[in-house]
Length: 397
Image 1 (spheres, rainbow, N blue to C red):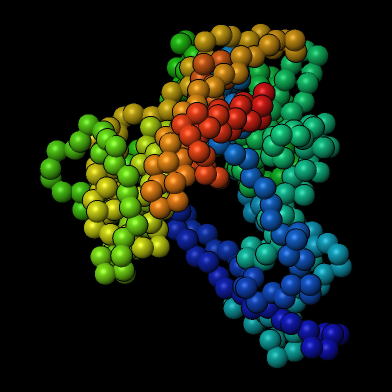
Image 2 (tube, rainbow, N blue to C red; image 1 turned 180 degrees about the vertical axis):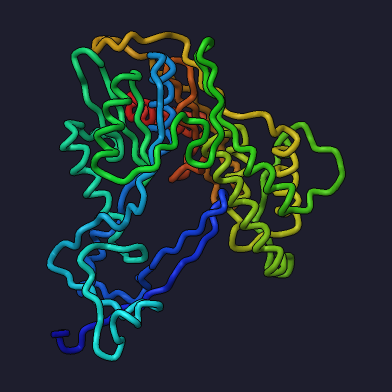
């Protein structure tokens, strides 16, 4: 009954040995073989994830109200999605199933999404939305992956989704009840307390109400994967006043060295976003030369990596100054600090914006980035930076 000229996908097994010694096999469709308009619609495949600002805001609220937070991992998340728009996806009989179906005469019609398909992430997110709606949770207008519900006795309960990782925050009673509802709907691995989240280690002090975010595994990879030398690390992440300049092709790194440069910069981009805002500016400088870098750029990269290793115990500290009893009329304090470096890039004369946004004196949003347009004075560049900071403050609010 196969339609004429139907495109048939192939598949590949993914085998993995878990850290605890168990084995996992996962069948993945080769999604790159899919045809736009036949198997999926290109405008309907991207699923959102929450952002770092939302996560830090939720952590601050958790500290202020002395709530608890627990993590759940939905097993086989991409197997829960349904196909939309009447799309039929056919797949050849997977390796190992020949004894059940003769590949000469049979193909498979997928009834639900599987890993590897382009629309799987979006299809699962739609199922997650249905689940939270049935659980009487509303979706935030500011972040599509933040869900909340108010209860007269239990107060506010929050869910944050990062693909298949779900964080629930609230009172112990509300967390227990919300967690049970999701476990009843999906097969979940209940991870428990927030000791680790999105690749970060979270250390919490309940008495003093603070959380420290570090990334020790990433720090260790700097030592393992890069030759940092035996010289003593510097006391600053970059040379003061240094502005890295583009290099000529003749002075560029070899392909192997350029690959190492990209890997190191990519790791630092992740670290600056989650646990080390102090390195925002030097990492921004390094990221401008991912295509062509020079020896000077590599030296700046190794200096920054060594600095991070020498200060491995440092991280982002969230310590709000006030407590919250859960009242709906409570007025939260949102503040910000901004600065600008005027015309630092001599090639395009653009200035640099830097800002910090605080919720109850805890830093929840940071940025160091080149401004989108050329400003004509220090005052104008400062105004542009302050405006961007105010916009971020409105988002936090």
